[in-house]
Image 1: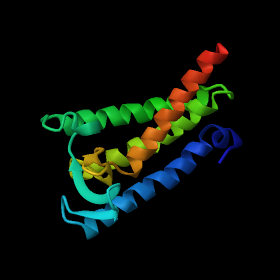
Image 2: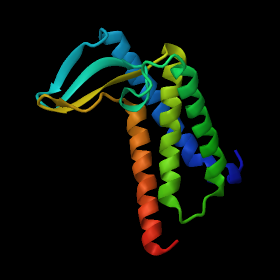
Image 3: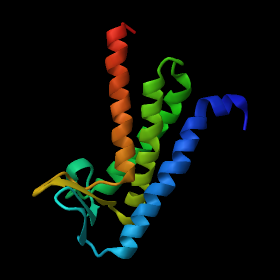
Length: 163
């Protein structure tokens, strides 16, 4: 591996080697040990593990659309391509933006794998406060959320500094 490749894509490769296998392994465990919609309490009133299949995008958007799998898969592939294209073009001081993109890519890849294999994304983390539940999510979703948060922080800090 050339030093130039390592500098440009090393962190991305590391994130993909951690997030994608962890995401797929946890989903495999859920599929093997849970029935669809089965739930197990981990922390009473706050955290459950549950096996659900999200056929749509975030919060079930496009769940009933006939073109959801090709459309959402194409969006994921486009996002991955754009990230791979943008990363080497970032300035060194854009650390938070770089980290954000590095986290979004393996998250998009993990969910894309599900969509292509199952026609839906496997979700299993159910965070709630008594009867008020956040939509179930997975490791890939967590990486995407952290990545978008990093990108928003980069945007906020770059505006404050005038860059």
